[in-house]
Length: 340
Image (cartoon, rainbow, N blue to C red; front, side, top):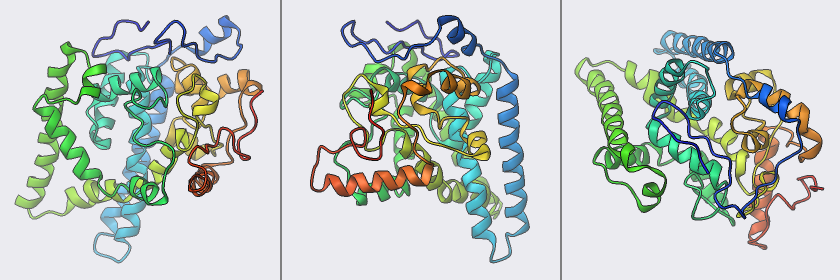
């Protein structure tokens, strides 16, 4: 029961893949919900400009310290800011970051290139993620399941094989080779476009590498490739909080998804995705309206985790418990408020 999709608009799904698979929905006044669903350009422009300004400051620090012992520290700081391109890319994948389609697509491309994920593939895989949230074998953005191990947690969070995996996927898609799982959510009419986009992105990255080598310049490496790797683990720690060690195969986002408390700077960089249960319940509500949505339905939801560190500590604790009880998950754990 999904609406038609174009390349420039986000797939909108009501999470009803089957008429008998009814997802939990909190009570909210329909008129209020329609108000919250209104899109505009201003909020997206302000959040995107703030990210660009912070990244520009990070670039300045890296360049100023390139011949000092502070270089690796400034690349780490700048890399964290750079990797928060994830947040804008995610919101643009929904088509809700901006009211203007051209603006949404322009920012989507910029942030997807920074984050290294072809935008059209990201859009469709993420739509399927919302349709089949945390269902084994159906959710294409579910790279792990219960039980987890601390070894896998560290390997995934630190992004040990990130560049290898990203390059492998781009090369495979550039050759129009898709897995059976990908063919399930990528319409035939869009596969050639994914291949074209993948080739464009590969040309950008190869151009940066070759330009640095030919010109004997370290700038492509200290301003992109190294910071992108160094800072990724912090953003992945935020991504971990969304679903890791939560319940699986349930039509209830309160049990499969986690929200967390964030301070003002975190909410700015993360585009309010700390309200992740709310986002999954109503994916058509733009990021800037999620705090207001939370105010409307918070009494019907579990209490959010205390923050990104606290949520990851909960995850570590759950992983240790899963060594004894493979079926343990945090939707029923002592650190997640019981759902009435």
